[in-house]
Length: 235
Image: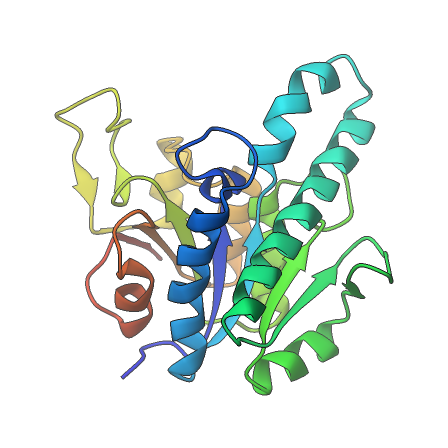
């Protein structure tokens, strides 16, 4: 029995690249789509925000010499490319999906309208929120938090490549200790870098829990949605 009725899944762009560090790996995206579609088939309403790092990292060096606002807009457009790739993979396995973009581009995606997004979710469609918030200086973590609050999601599920939140970087420190539960304020005071400070503060102020889990473990998406003890709960 699913624990959550409506979740916001936050994916990094790097997830879409698979073993490569850039671009889109069709097999990885297909595998991801199968796991996400299983949530919808179990009656869970799913909203998704995907980053653009796999596309944008490659042009980020050039963007360093650009105006910050221009660079941020380029990053937002990268998230649209990823959103369309994920939509295609979901629809190929028969899952109705909508991409809603914060930057209007009618030929490519629906404009983001909150009530329409909720209606899609209620009809069992997966909704992918693209182009961040349409505002520069805001990360995709902040966009995910904003959309989660707007659609009244019960949790933000933040997919990462490690098992949860650690007291230090587990990739560099073998003795790093993972938290099963941690408070928002502790994340902020210890600068644990799970999500940016703006999004953590927004979640804290609106009592929206964040679940950080390892996406690379097969079946973890369903375990997380079922309420099994997976990853770290920030609340």
